[in-house]
Each structure stands twice: as C-alpha cells, then as structure tokens.
Length: 258
Image (tube, rainbow, N blue to C red; front, side, top):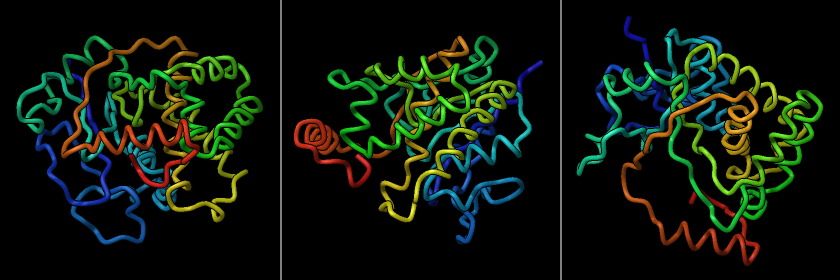
C-alpha cells in the first residue's frame, strides 16, 4: 500500500509553490496576521504566536499535532529537497512519486550536510550568535535527559550537520522527535528573557533545534538517507563568506540572516 506523505512548506509570504499534492504551504506565524491563502499554523493545537522565536518550528508543531500522514516533512518556501537536479531549479523539487520511492526504503530523509570545515558546530554558533544559548541547551539536556548529554557533546564537536530543520520522517518517529525537542526548547524558553534580545537574536529556538536533530538521530541510532536540497532565488555567497570570516576572526556576530 502506498504511503501517505505530506511535506509542509514553511512560509511567511506568497511565493511560487509546487503544485504537487505532496506539499502543503503553511503560513507560519499566522496568529494576528492577514490570511495569505495558505494553511495557517494557528489552527488547531498550535504555537503560532511563538513564531518570532521558533521560526519554522511553529509550522512543524502544527504539522505534528494536526496532520494525519504516514510520513511528515518540512521544507522552506525557498529551500526544497531535490532528487534529480535539472537546469530549472523549480522543476527539480522532489515529487510525490520520488518521495514515495524514498520512504519505501528509509524512515528518515534529511538534506545533505552543511560543512563548516574550519569550525565546529559549537564554535561556529559561539562566533556567530550568543554562545549562552547552547549552554542553556546543555544544562536542560543534562537535567531532563542526561542520557543524551554525551551525544550532545559529540555532535557539538563535529564540523558538519543536517541543517535548516528540514527532514521527512515516519510519523511514529516524528512523534518521538517532536516530543523530545519541544520539551527541551520550552524549558530553555523559561530560562531566557526574550525581551532583552533583538528580533534577530530572539530566533534562537529555530537555530538550536537545527543542531539538536543530529543529537537525536545519533543517540537513537536512527538510519537516514541524505538527498540534495536546492535554494530558489539567488544566494549571496560573497556576503555569506564575508560574514563567516568576520565572525570567526574579528568577533563580529551575525545581525541578520546570511
């Protein structure tokens, strides 16, 4: 029997969306905002109002609590999974039939790792953001699920990770992962005064969770399949590299997305 697979596309604005039935565009942070014609993340059980701090995770939470599917995934309005790259990026986006073939063989699909080469995950976070965020995560893991702490330390010493909170995951595993990661994030939230942070820095929960995915996968010995991802629109690699170097060597933390 064919699996029922749904991938939400986290977005805060109208954008070109794939018409494949695999995808559900979700307006994240919809609470108090005008309807833009997509599924809103403030329907049913939700944390939509936390979007300024949780980013795409408010969409993930909505999908976890409200979607009924065998596999559930998350992509972004400008960042998608791709199985076969073509000249036209948009036509390279993963299709329902391609996803079905993958999910028939694997329980978890993730994007190819992002590599930092001269940085560990922890040093990169400390150079570009407030390192106290990871210290809060470390402390909460130590208190709530200490069996994960050695894996957390191991992953923080790596120089690559599956980023962007992108994945496609069997629903039973999604239940386990979301229960674990949101429990940690909600506890961290209790210990941080978000009012003291800039709008950019306040998006910390979306960033911390990017690193926690590999902690969970590694600790639970969950096998996965890596596939490419594509970025729609132009990426300013000069600014990305410039920001990376300024953060590592000159102590200039990020103040906007790179």
